Length: 154
Image (cartoon, rainbow, N blue to C red):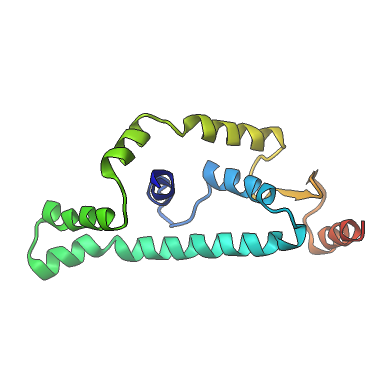
């Protein structure tokens, strides 16, 4: 649970979008989770939709402390305390979360995933694999479409 929560709050970007290592790793790992290649586009669509909704919710919720301060005359510290009640309601074990983050217990998994992405030739996004082969040709629509059509008929 802590990993899921940290995925939403640890990687902070002023634009609300992710462009760093996590995106690279996630997009490299997504195809490995799907057995049916025809479903990959749907998985990417759901992945991006969930990310957009999470970003939107985060942007909206980031204003809660200010709303609390204005509505109830709370100072800055008091206006943040209700968020910890929210964390408890959604089941976040604060002590476990702190322990797992400070103990870097997910570092080996993250490093392994990063290494797998690098070993696969992923250097940034977007990176495409067609039938498990790193695609390095032109990304123009005609060229890429023809490569996909050829590989779909195999």
